[in-house]
Length: 422
Image (cartoon, rainbow, N blue to C red; front, side, top):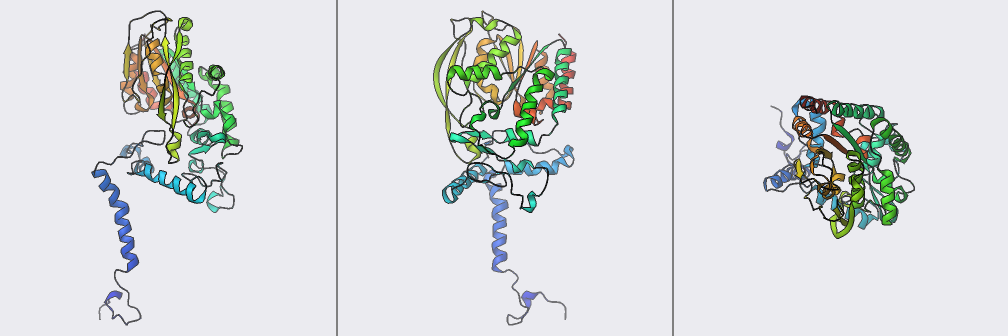
């Protein structure tokens, strides 16, 4: 007789097995839900928001080689519909039922303080930590929250610090070699400026703190960056409070004003002598760090009016984020920087926009996240101005991920600037 499948045997036979058991049906049902429900939600128009203080991962290119496969996982995770709701649910269940923070991209979590992985776990028995070992958010004292990437990037950088300094030096030489002024401003991490509210112990502190100190010891001397830390400390002393928000990773408008003043003085020394700054309204904006914990909180931001000549207020609100480069032009006057400026910034620059609109007669602002898509177009934008200002968050330089550390991007910018020297 030909061989028979177990399901065709008589039920009373000892080897009889049903073709589709209950467990098999359950597994198939779960697989259908797992794979097809997200697709159905996408078809119905449900789109995942960018809630992790960064843009959603782009679909990997087939030209990336093996990077296509390694990048696909991140893209698929970022674009999973309702993922933000799942994070919120995980946080509520973990805190409400178990009384502790959810693990969310970290191996171990002890109360509000993120501890290093236990040495007894086999998967953690290694010398080199992985990015996933670090907490997404460090929960500090008095309810303060810190961005975990500040620590993770310092401990597991994409580029060594020597290479970062070398590439920043080349970027400067490219801009200055075209006859333009180059101004590099580094926005310090919140962990750098308000360390007093960090937990006593947190995973990565032993490697992150020495890297932070070395970075600030070198960034001005080797890359010529403007050190904003003294101005930020002075602004905090005058305000009687830190110039970083409790639940957000960015500085407040007081910090933004410190940067605006520093950049203006670099381009036109003495120009801020006539500036008059006065308090305006207070706005409530969503905080970015609680979102990573599945929570929703807001921060109050004091807004300011800037009168460059000491009389006429020229500051005005600017919608953010800027999806594309935008140019702001006004007639020159007292207290205004009249030189044409192109500013490449990131999310810290959002807190500066209303100031630069007031204090610069011709300034174009470009989000650095948009550079990789078309670096030559950005190069053309820079070539239209006499000064190039780059604002970069400390974390993006320390971890070596800032787009302007990419040699191919800088090559493209160099070609455009060289074609239109000043």
